[in-house]
Length: 270
Image (cartoon, rainbow, N blue to C red; front, top):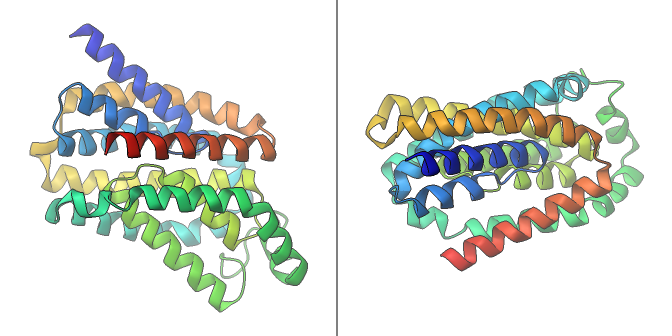
């Protein structure tokens, strides 16, 4: 019993820290829970609830970076919450196999987006000086909150909603996908995108958790939730401290590395 509890708490700690810095912590906790004999649905739902604490801790740790882009973050948060609600609902009414089948593809797309983000950002900044200025921290409270013209704003909203659906349904590497997408669609710095990512992903997990508590209590193992909560909370606090000190190039390298490992893990265990 104690070895199992320690393993779950340790996995929660690692997942909480990785989620704050890059995302994809679910790919640590979920496989471990399944390996320990928990049914996949119970593992998925319990893991989601437990990782909320790490997300909250990380979001608080990045509060200064989020405040610098307050208008941007607050404009996207309701979109992410709506996606999380839709995704959690789908998890309860549809077989998980259909959505899990495209998880490797989504992670691969995220890796590519993160890797080519600097080149795309440079092209966008060169062509759209106004968008670059609107995204600068000096003007975080722009009227619309989301940078760019109507087309780009719509693209950002649609992307965050779809990723919110994915996060509410399963969530593995959701953070990598959010960072990759925002890195392509905006000229906000990677460090700031990572901070906003923590807020959005935490919101998605919280919304999904509410749905699960209300409508899927039989799929919740509260002992697992408690262990992951403690571990993820501590990991999230440490991750926020570490992540803020990482230079953008190193952060991007970590994101790509974790994404590749997550993709290999999924393919080997599928």
